[in-house]
Amino acid sequence: MDLKAAFIGSGNMGGAFIRAAALAVPPQEIIITDHELKKAQALSGEVGCLCSPDNLEAARRAKFVILCVKPQVLPSVLTPLVPILREAERSGEPKVLVSIAAGITIERLRSITGSDTQPIVRIMPNMPALIGRGLMILATDGSASEEDMQELSEMAKACGEVRRLDESLFDQATVVASCSPAYAFMFIEALAEAGEKLGLDADNSLFFAAQSMQGAAAMVFGTANTPDELCRMVCSPGGSTIAGVNVLREKGLYELIEQAANASFNRNIELGKLN
Image 1 (cartoon, rainbow, N blue to C red):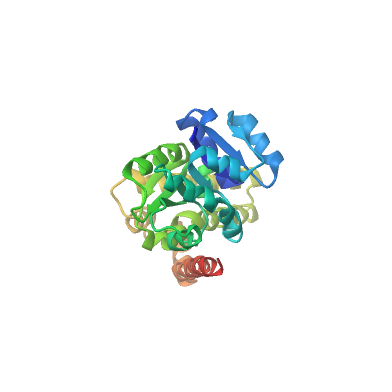
Image 2 (image 1 turned 90 degrees about the vertical axis):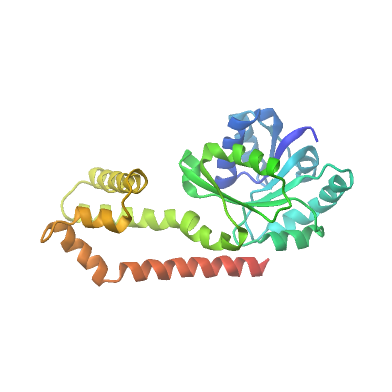
């Protein structure tokens, strides 16, 4: 193994991870592949890493084999790599198999590899990782060493925050950490559209909505107050804010969000069973 990491897939999330890894280790120690070779070549030229049209070659050369593919195609991508993983284990220098596919458990990955000892790690990124403001959640079943986990964490740090979590909570965390940006984008869009209908121009309304949500999130991190306490701090008795908050409560905002979270969670479970 002469390289640090092989990334199989270079889409949005894979691309974000690749850019982060290239800041943590020399780009020449990273090789990427993609079924759309031109996409991998473009990213390779951008960050200075290696590129290959061959998944097998990339996996053979690297310590970390990182699958950045959709859960629906992961089994067909991983299966041809299994002989390479087995050969590395037999040589006494096992590779670390890493997956970012939602819903695909370590147990399922292990069943495909056919090994009880193959080091395996799951990583769940979220969309803000594309701009270095994301969250990367890591889980292993103990097969990956602490050194391996530290190396992965260092490669992921440029994407944003890195947290470790027990895999039994991974599908739940996916909802709150990875699906949730879409919910937030919808809220910002709806608020901006409401502002337009009240007479604001589109640019200002979107800016005001997004900047306010960014500031609100910063207050959750920057104060000791809970979100509920912060909400009550904004709501003067008989004021305009409480009038709007009361509508959101009466219309069941909390229940609606819970229903959305449950739907996303159940889909994670379904994705795991499909594969």
